[in-house]
Image (cartoon, rainbow, N blue to C red; front, side, top):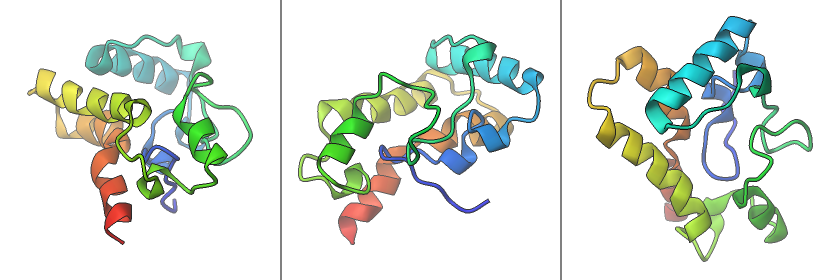
Length: 130
């Protein structure tokens, strides 16, 4: 699958909750369990599934404050914003770093599936360098 970068720098194409990546209800149950384990965030398996924020379709986080901000400023993503690192974005970036800090024993498989898709800081910094 081609790389799909969300407004906040998350990688939709790597996200286990991105609808094309979900193969079964068991996938949704595992996502729910792992998100709770690593991020202390619970979402019922029935609620898991996202079309990505680049489309006007089903969004997993309907309360996201980053997407409307980026769209309102007519930007591609937060990496192009003059206010890069604002509180809206910082909350998302810090959550990933906190999960890594609090879970030193993350397996490579879990890291690739449940952490890497959301490590947005470096991705967005690369846009800022251009």
